[in-house]
Each structure stands twice: as C-alpha cells, then as structure tokens.
Amino acid sequence: MLQNYRELSDLQPMTIFVGEKEIEGEFTNLRVDRDSLGEGRYAYDLQEGEDGEFCALKESVIVNHGGTFITNEEIDLGPEGCLELGEDKDNDYSF
Image 1: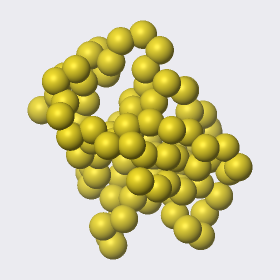
Image 2: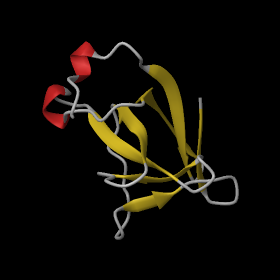
Image 3: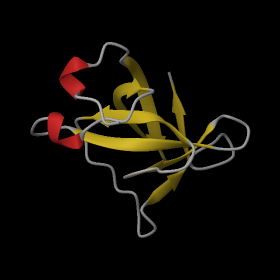
Image 4: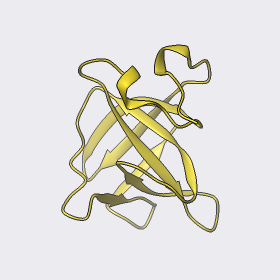
C-alpha cells in the first residue's frame, strides 16, 4: 500500500553519495505515493540485498523493498535505471 508523503511520521535524514556528489533527503521504510510529493520532490526506492543492507537505488522496487528516499534533486539512475550501492561501489549512503 502506498503512503501519502504529507502523512508520514517516520522520516529521517539520509544522504546518497553518487560518485563525489552528496544528495541529501529523507528516508522512510514505507512505499510512498509519488503523486503526494508535490512539485520539485523526487522519490526513489531502495532495494535490500541478501545481507539486509541497501544494494540499489531505483525508480521502483517490487522485491526486497527496503524503503524510499525522497529528495529535492532528480537523480540520474543511468541507462539501467539503477544505481548500485555499497562500500565497494562508486555510490553509497549514510544516515
């Protein structure tokens, strides 16, 4: 079930690192209705890997959805529509 962004109470600060760039935003464990974001806001889903850590940032995640990242910046997910995340990758995250 999709949640209305304006009604979320569990938002916490999060940063996604895309190469050298830091993108600040908010994180929720829930799936967010993109229509509830308002103009100038973007939402991306985080996918969990087998170890329970986030392994990818995507437009939408069906299996192993770990949460939603909401930001004021549009993120280029590349031709595959996915940014792989992790300490051993060019992209990572922190809370």
